[in-house]
Structure formats: C-alpha cells, structure tokens
Amino acid sequence: MQSVQLDDLDARLLRMLATEPRIGVLEMSRRLSVARGTVQARLDKLVARGAIKSFGPEVVPAVIGYGVMSFVTLEISQRYGHTAVADHLAEIPEVLEAHTITGSGDVLCRIVARSNADLQRVIDQIVGYEGIVRASTIIALAELIPYRTQPLVIAASGTK
Image (tube, rainbow, N blue to C red):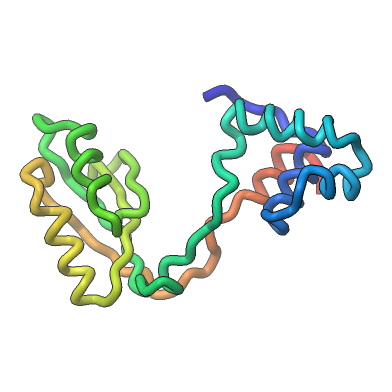
C-alpha cells in the first residue's frame, strides 16, 4: 500500500463524504466549486490508492441486536500460523476485525455479542479451534471516542 499525499481539496472532499455519505459527485463539485470531472478524478485516485476503502454503510452492531462489544487477545499455536487462525475467525460473524499484534498475545479481535451469555458462546466458538491456545477477553463498557479518521485527514492535509 503506497502512501497518499492529501491536499486541501482531498481533505474537503473526504470531510464532505464523511458527513454526508450519500452526496453525489455533482453536488460535491458544486459545493467545492470545482469541476465534476475533478471530483470524480480525485475520488478515483483515492480509491485506487487505497485511501478510501468503502462507500458502503457503517452498520452499528448495537442497533441490530449486538449490544455487547469486547476485545479478545488470542495466543495461537505457531505451528498453525496466523493464516489458519484468520480463516477460522473469518467464519464467525461476530468477529468484526482481527489484527496480528506484538506483546503477550498474537492476535487482537474486536467481537460483538447479543448478551454476556451470548459472548460466552462466541468466545467458546473462537477458542474451539485447536490453533488457539488461550484467549483473554475485555468487555467494553462505553464508547468514548468512536472509530474516526477525519482528524487524521485534516492533519495529513495540513488544513484546519
């Protein structure tokens, strides 16, 4: 993945998409006072270089019945490797993301469940794979700062 330099126009375009994800290219070009082709070219460039990952909806798990969020650190058996564990985790719908990490564990997962009892079921499903040696779970009580990228966009573009 290559690094993408953002300028003021990129930052304004990304900010507009973040606040109004359903806005069209023509309306963006009108509000940004640039040609429609310029907006489309910038979007295409940002997508091609991986700066924009998706235009899809951001689903809130709690609203669709998954009110318990937790973070699970996994220790894995090195003979199975990360790929086999990732394949296992990808089969579990409640695993929202997984990352290889440094430190005492090998993989950090963000998972959701419908209740604490359901969380036990999800964890049992995760550790039921023989490539996972141990799991340590932390239940999130409240979200203080939601996942965000706009402050990074502003900092990367050098704008305010």
